[in-house]
Amino acid sequence: MPKLGLQTRILLQLAPVLACLTACNLVAPTPLSTPVPTPAIPQVQILFPAHNQQVVEGVIFDIDIHASDPAAGVQRVELYVDEQLQQTSESEIGDLRDYRVTMNWFAKETGWHKFAVVAYRADGTASHPHIIALQVVPPA
Image (cartoon, rainbow, N blue to C red):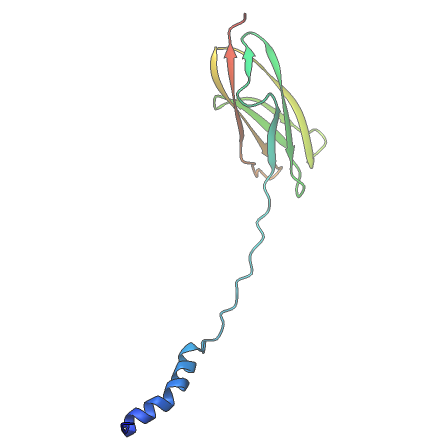
């Protein structure tokens, strides 16, 4: 067996120690940031009519809307048709955790129309819009 030099023997003896030191995490752990709770925004949806439904031109039909906000309540709901505000409904008894309202629209102009509803808290916090498309068809 060949004789190893002094430097080689020292390196062989230090190899396990160096391996351990390089694998160890000697850095102090950084504190995890505490997540800041994001307040939920109001929720809103069109319950009726269904997305992609057909409605007959010249008919007034109901749009059933449900809005909710368990934290702060809903004060008002707005209905937009083709990005134009059509109706607003405001709670007369203060903020409601569950707010159900029926609005209506006179079906005019055949073709596709975009309906969107947005719910608002008293402080102005808005929901994301809930959007459906309806097709107005000529009377049979």
